[in-house]
Image (cartoon, rainbow, N blue to C red; front, side, top):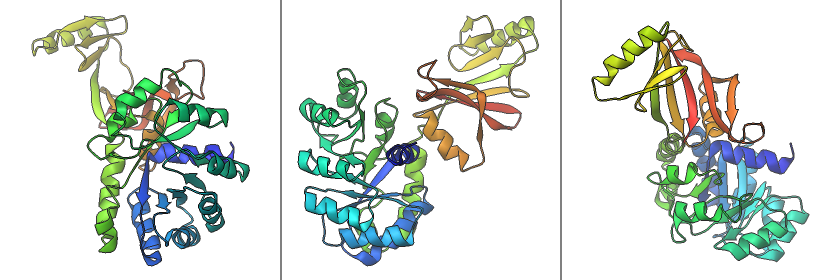
Length: 326
């Protein structure tokens, strides 16, 4: 895997790129440590202040676990400064061909800002497959990104601008969104007052929120079809109509009764998530592992395509858990 692909994979696995404005270099390392403690080991340090380059340099030196990028890069001079300071990727609010070409020539992943089709086409001519939609909320939000997926099926987006805990799942569950950018967990007043504990807690909330976890259904094991039909019949009394199938009986979408014992001592629980690959990275840090033989991909015969479904280990309370993408 190329270095650029490794960087984009880490961005995808975390799912959130904090957009940071630093007035003091001394705040850079404590902020980076607070983000990492909250499960977000990524920082986009913006060139909105004179402290940008030295802040990038400090974080790269003191926090090697952090993936540090430079944001709001609007000139070649700033790009040179950012790369010299140690930035591993560069972002811009708009599309400047000279800046893009310079970064690519240096072998540094560049994520230019776009606001429409012409800029996306300009990015494609340079071989780029990831762009930053900015300002996302003003340009139409998730609906805009969904619409762009038609004419640009191979382009992925990092929407930034107006993204928050309340709406990030609507972005995250779109197949052409790699991650989102935002500053709600690193607001200027949090930084200026040294509220590193608050930044950590807000980062944890954001990392959980972007998973978009919800219950898809509960599966119940039965030993054979006759007992499965009896169980499904009883569940239907609660207003969940039966939908018979060859291997199982669904009661509406909420329950699945297996005609023969399936995974799990008692059954299974399906959990929806915005991105199965990202959820595996998140849950992997908590001790869960995927059951590889159960994995299915969005493109069935392409294992490099995003995951659509996979079971997890260990079981919980005698129930197997599986992830399924929205």
